[in-house]
Image 1 (cartoon, one colour):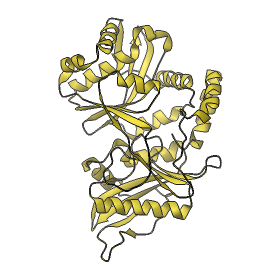
Image 2 (cartoon, helix red, strand yellow; image 1 turned 30 degrees about the horizontal axis):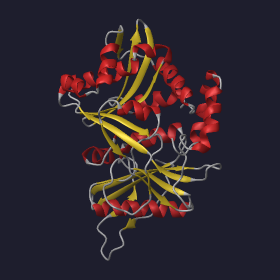
Image 3 (cartoon, helix red, strand yellow; image 1 turned 90 degrees about the vertical axis):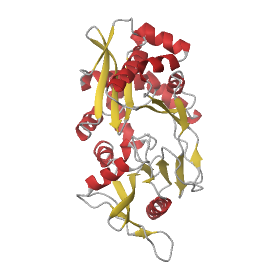
Image 4 (cartoon, one colour; image 1 turned 45 degrees about the horizontal axis):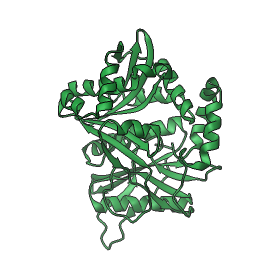
Length: 361
C-alpha cells in the first residue's frame, strides 16, 4: 500500500544470510495471496484483502513484510500500526482478526520476519507488537496471554454423525429448533443483518463496528464472504456473516433477537450452516475464538468441538507487561455496564467512532 511504513532489508544474524525481508511491492499482492493459500499456517486474515479492510475501515496504516529466498516467497507478516493517545501506540497483526501473526513454514523465514517486526516496533517506539497466531509454529520465548480459545469441528462424518456427537442437551435444543417453523436463508440484506448484529453487541456492552465494514468485506472477498440468516415467517431473527478459506467455513459476525430465544434461532442457524457446509463439501467448521469465562465460550463449549488455546504472542518494547485490554478484565466493567445502558440508536452513532481507538478489536 502507498501508506505503508517503509522498511529496510532485514536478514538473519548469520555470515551468509539466505532469507531477505522486504516490504511487499505494489502489484505483487497476488503472489502474497498465493503463498498464504499454499502455506500450512496461512489463514483467511493473512490475505492482502484484510489489510485493505483495516486501512479503509479503521484508518490504520499497514506494513506487509515478505520473506524471500531468491524469487520465492517463504513467509509473510502483515502488521498494522495503531496510533492511540489513550492506550499508547502499538503494532497488531492483525486488527479485526482472530488469527494473524507470522505466516511461514520454515524456521529461518519465521525468525527473519520476527526480527523485522521487532526492528519495526523498536524504530517506531511503540508499546508492543501483538501477534495473533493461530498455532505456535516455533518456540520464540516471547510472552503470551492465555485468554482466547478457538473451536473447530471436522464435518467429514456427515450430519448423522454430527448430531449423535452433540451432547444430549444440545441435541434436544437443536431438534426443538427444527420444529419451530424457522427457515435458513441466504437472502438477508446488510441492513437486516446490521440491526441484528448491532443489537447483540449492545447487549454485550461493546461498541459496534460501522455498517460499512460489512459492505467492504463482501466487496473485498466476493467469493469468500457469505451472509446467512434465520427467518420466522418474513421476520429476520438471526444472521451470521461467514468467511470461506481453503476447506473451512468460519461464522464470524452474528446477531439475533432475544425475544425469539424460545425458538433457539442460534442453535438452528449454526446447525443449518453445518448441514449446508456438508452438502457443499466443506471439511472444517471453525467456530472462531472466544474469551474464557464468557457466554460465547460457554455456548460453543456445548457443541462437542475441539477446543484449542490461541498462542497470542507479544514483543514488548516500551510496555513492561503483556497488555490487558479485554472487556472481561475488571477495570472495564464500569464502561461495559454504562454502554449497555446507552440507548440503542446512540450506540450505532458513537460505536463506529470509538472502534478505531480500541487496540484489542
